Length: 232
Length: 231
Image 1 (spheres, rainbow over the protein chains, first blue to last red):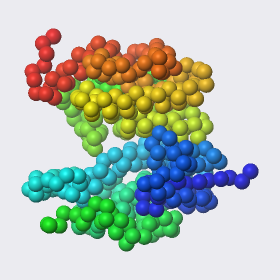
Image 2 (cartoon, rainbow over the protein chains, first blue to last red):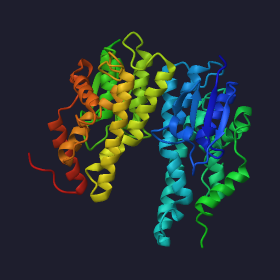
Image 3 (tube, chains in turn cyan, red):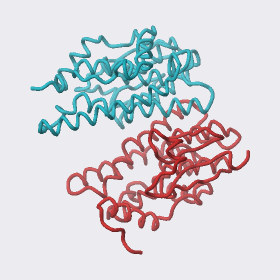
Image 4 (cartoon, rainbow over the protein chains, first blue to last red):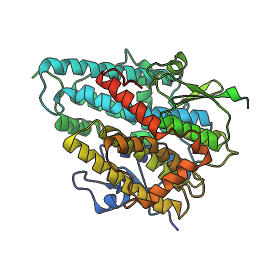
């Protein structure tokens, strides 16, 4: 029986791109279904009734949801180009940092980029203070990642691994958020290793082929969240 | 292995610490439990978990492992001679990881907020939690296949992730004066909860609800800035 692999995703989502990156790395053929997130398909709702979100991987009719769960499933199903190391401690380390990125980094980055224009109008001074706090928080979080990278080419060592893929939000989307909002977060001066890593990351074929067009992405985020904290 | 080769930093009341303890028990691993003092963090904790400064932290040899679900998977992968915690089938493993993530990302955070919430917000949270329990009841029916646990005959990953939260669920029910786990709506889960709490790997590390209630009252008082209630 021919293998059927479907990916339900959205062009601009780092989470669904993660799934595609992993599949591409392993040379797995799949069919991509672009979801309109304002009008979700019955198939998506059927395959992910709990969260009703993308990405969902459907392998021979069986759905897997949650991007990090999907990455591990992909690694365990298709053994070529492993993205998780064999050693349990190193696996634990990769899982820890992937969770760190999803749980802490993204929301802090959003707050730093669009905190001032998020939700209701705030007094200018209060918004300024909150903005500075958010920028400081992002800086602290990025420092942890900078330290974790050490002298490695990738988080995964010599080749791209699960943690590199999970860090796509830092490696590509962060730059987009910065440009869309005008807020500088990942500076070469403070984070030389992370910046080098980001440059290497986006050059890897399987990654490069799965990055949404930068201009389109910048325009999308500018539209959705406004042009950042520039004084009005 | 020498007993002090495996240490666990934790606090008795934490459901996340409990997950690590249950897992070590399942694998019959001897370990040293280092109880943190509530309200202060030891040097060892700050050194071994500089990112989050939280328990649990498993220290194996000199290597620290943090985040409860990461710890449980680590334990499962290192001590392979004991019963498996995660399924051997990779699709089933994905399902198990999915539900554990759901519990930690959606269900438990909603449940924790019930006690501090009021009015419409509170009702919404209760509805979310009850809806979640209906989903978990369905999942239980599907994955247990008539056996006692989500993992079948033995406690597995979902059992540990969910069962560790039962203590705080009961606290919320009692202090929040709300029924969450209902025999009429989720009979499977009610029975499962009994089996879980009676299991040998769980019994010795499941805190008594009364003690958790006292602890919770103390915490709430501290948060509100009031002096702690006199015992």
